[in-house]
Image 1 (cartoon, rainbow, N blue to C red):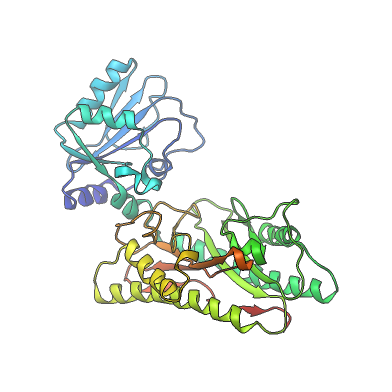
Image 2 (spheres, one colour):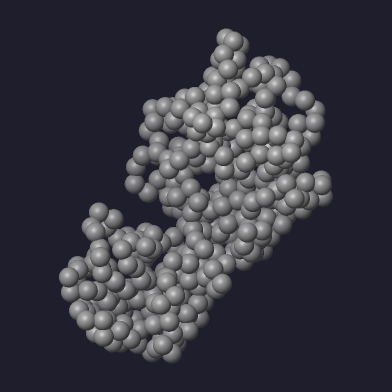
Length: 394
């Protein structure tokens, strides 16, 4: 953790400090930015205050006085709750406006981890609390070069697994079998395991009407069998099985047949164009040195889908931040579920994944790529980018 850079960012934002607070590991943002030891169980409240200028301050409980020992600053140890309040007020000093993991009206829930009671406590000191969302994007969602390399390595494996999966479906169909969604999911999970990857759930393997459910996952009870003429969607996300590795997350589509029907290809063409419009806006803005915000990229993507007559069928945001969690805490590409007014920063990674879901027609479409903005402001897309639905039996 680099306190000098955080203090510089606080001064630039005209904030008096950034207060980190946690209780029973409720704030993963604090855990990562402050590089806390995840193996040591903590049961008492602790605070770490980084002022815009001066020495950092720690407020820890007498039972767990070691909690912030790896961090610089003055330590204040409390026992009774009255002492906790008094020492916290002392640690905050003359601060008038501070950042915390809070989002007004919970607009960005990923950074809204501080409970209402703690906000009331800080405000009772006469201190204004503002959102740390922009700081989180700068210091928690920022990827180092080594972080980025773990993302690329995971991507190389996942792209191969995607190709192997499509080939396996084709092989089983040609052999006269009707593989189920969950059988293919297990096939993918085995490949992910063999490739040294880890993941939290999935992958999604969905045919026809199941592809019209954005978060469908097969179960033994729900899994459909595959046959010729089916539209297949796979969404797979995973990361290297090592510390500080970064997720890779893609969605591809195949058709179980020799040629893809034109009506399916036309709909896929809409989300392909929408995806590319989103990337082009980010590329243009960084090339011009002009800020670009998450909500704007969502708008650029969504406009294409709306103009094609499928606006009501695009039922989720355009994309999400990617980090050590597949849905990270940085800027999301969103002006639907929230208006993400945070600026997209160099050194961050996010998905672009427009979809069109038509349950009445028993079909759904999605394309997903991962976009990384380098420190120089160039736009990198990891791995192959799908241009057409893959005819699996061609």
